[in-house]
Every structure is written in C-alpha cells, then in structure tokens.
Image (cartoon, rainbow, N blue to C red; front, side):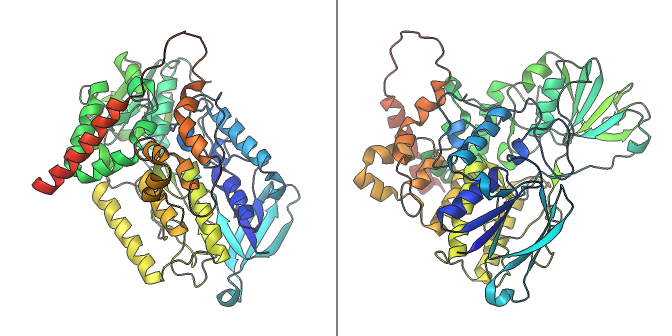
Length: 533
C-alpha cells in the first residue's frame, strides 16, 4: 500500500486523509498543534505560523456551499456558521470517517525533500519533531499532500515613523476580541474581510474607529434577495454562462449598480477606482451601518506615524491614538520544502492547477488549499485531494510539463489583466470554473446531456440552482449515493434552522415564472453576443 504524508490537519488536511483512504492509500497526518481545524480552531493566544479566526468570526459562505461533497452540514446549523459551528462540523467529519487515528498531533514538519532515488521511486524524506519531547525523526513516504494553507505569516508594511509611535500596534493575526479596547481610539489598516470585521465589532466599544484604506473597496453582503445566501443565488451555472457571454464591462456596471443600491459607495468614501470584478470580495453586513452612525470613519492610506497618532495621505491627522491594527494580509510559503521543489516569491507561486510543481519528474507531491476562492474553500480543497490521490495511484495522468507551464502562464496573465495588482490577488480562483477544471481532469465533472436524458429534474436543479459541492458526486469516480437527495433538499436545509416559530402560512409557488424569465435572459444574452459582438 502506498503511503501518503499529509502536512496539516485543518480544513484541507482532514479531507486529504479521507480522500487518501477512499483511494486505498495509507495516510499519516502531521499536525503541529493539539487539535484539528487549523484556521478554524479558535485559541485565545496567537501562534507564530498558525492562522486563527477572531472570537466572533462567522464564515462568509453559506453552509450548503461550504460543506464537503459527501457530508452535508446538519439542518439545524445556521445559514452562516460561527467559527464554533465550523469547528464542530470538522470534528463530526473526523469522527464520522474515523480519521483521528491517522493524525500525529503536536508534531512539526521540519523538512520535506526528495529521496536520493526520487527519479526512480518518487519518494520523499520527511523530518519531523515531536513538540512534547523534542525528538526528531525521519521517515520515507510515497507521496505528500501539503495542507498548511496561506494565512500563516503576517504581512507587515513598514510605515514611516511606525517605530516612534507610542501606542499599541498589532497585526490582525493577533487580534481576538474587543476586550481591552473599550473607550479607546483605534485605527484599523486594511479593508479586507479581517479589517472590516475587526473595525465593525470594535466600533461598538471603542471611542472611535478609523478604517484606513489605500484603494477603497466594494463591500458585498452575505445575503441576497429574500434574505437568502448570496452565494447560493449567484454561484449558479446558467448565470456563470450569462456572465461570460456579456461583455465584462457591462457585467461590472450591473454589479456596481447592484452594490450601490445597498449603499452608495462614493457617499460612504469607499468607492475604489477599480471595478467590483477586479478585487476579491469584501463581505460585511455591518460595515455600512457602523459608518452611517459615525462609529467608523473611513480614511485614506497612512502617510506616516507620529509619536501619538497618524497622518493620512490627505494630510488629516488623528492624535491621541491608542491602538493600530494592521489588517494587511499574509505572505505564504513552505519553509519545510526545499526551494528546488517549490519557491514562493511575493506571494507568486508556479503550480499546475495551483497544486502540482510542474518540473517534478514524478508527480507525487501536491499542495492543497493554496488558492483564494470567490466561493467556499472546503469543497475545492476536497476536490484537489480527490484529484491528487488519483494521480498518486496512477489512475490520472497529468499533461507534459510544457503544457503545465503554458497553463500557469495563461493564468498569471489572466490574473494580471483582471485584478488590481496586489499580494492579495495572486492565487484567485472562481468557484465553478476552477471546480470544473479539476473535475474534468479527474473525470467527475457533471455531464449535463446525460443528466437531461436520465434525470431531467435533477439536471434542471443543477443548472438553474446553486452549484453546490454535491454535483461533483453524481458521476464519474468517487460517486456518493446521497448526492441527488442533498441537491434536492439544499434550499430546505438552508432555511431549516430559521423555522423556529410556526406561522401556519402556505408555501409560495414553485417559482416557475422566475425560471422562465431566467431562460429568456439566457437566450437574449446569446443573441446579443451573436449580433453585436
């Protein structure tokens, strides 16, 4: 039996163990902490090289879109999960599939390098250290799945005068809760998801919060029409086709108009120069309310620090400042990996499908979870693991390295043309597009012609409904018998936890007219493309 080393027992690592077992491989997972969950294993104190959510963090993707493809989240869980629910889901997943016995906790991986006969065997030497005893040991594995994520190492900009500032300065990696910030003056630097969340919750206890942003940002809500999850509404196959049919500028205009209906980004001093399609979404339901009541004041980038405050690019100044929180993102890397295997520079990484180093003579190492999805991470990591384990077995053959390098360059060019230049925008993927790419290579992308002929109701729900992870368990390798039932029930499961008071009201109709309008828009889009482009 082929052995697989799994590095990390977070969201990617636990599904890597399961996928290895599904393919008849023998996994050993090395986890440096004493528990599973990675980023979602909340701890009161921050650890170097170990990402962790804030105490109040709620995930931005809905439960039906973020679950593993053969393990639905329970109906009684809320629509959007607090980090404690996410951790509980992971614990249940591990217990259900009996995965914990494959994990070596408090074991740090120090080195991963090819064996001397790698060209022949494809094997890897791994050196680990037991955190309790300090003992180091080496083992040889047939394959490696690196599941350490990309939120480990703080990105700290060096502002002029920062060292002279007498207040408290931390990175958002260290920030946990509002405790200790009561009645204080706070500047939060950065308007990504962490910065927005920290600013919003601090604004309820601090004397004043200033949110400093270099470019501004388009701010999305987690919820769409009728209070349903936005991701379930927009991550649909028919809509993905329409978006790609219409000109990008037209789609960007529509999206901008939609976002400004919620609140006018220019009036709130948030509007950036770039389009909403050129950034990773910042999701925050509370931010505009906190700005509108003055609890948060939006400011430009920091020009320099003084001993007691900051001066912004517009020469306005905040004095008597108590705290600065740098929500300035992360740099990622793999310090245990030899640079000849994989080298990361400026958050740029060169891997086929963001997984495989293209120059390896044996494709026996894959990096899992090193991407920034517009959508949920967990099902994509799972799909990566499903593909990687079949590559390790020899059931799937990757293209020649020349083709891999060509695709890598194409993706880098696309990234540069679409997104604002930023360390945040180097590993972006769109949910449907990337999942379909992986599933095509792995042989489990849904075949809609076959579905239409064999199960038209299911085909309809898959194409005109949310592109949930269950779709990738319907056909091909590694199918799951419960996939159809899960797809049919996904809307009911989404709102089930909200049904806490009997109303005695009749359900609305099936919404057939809505779908007729959708099909009409689809046809118009194609005609527009044909006649005017």
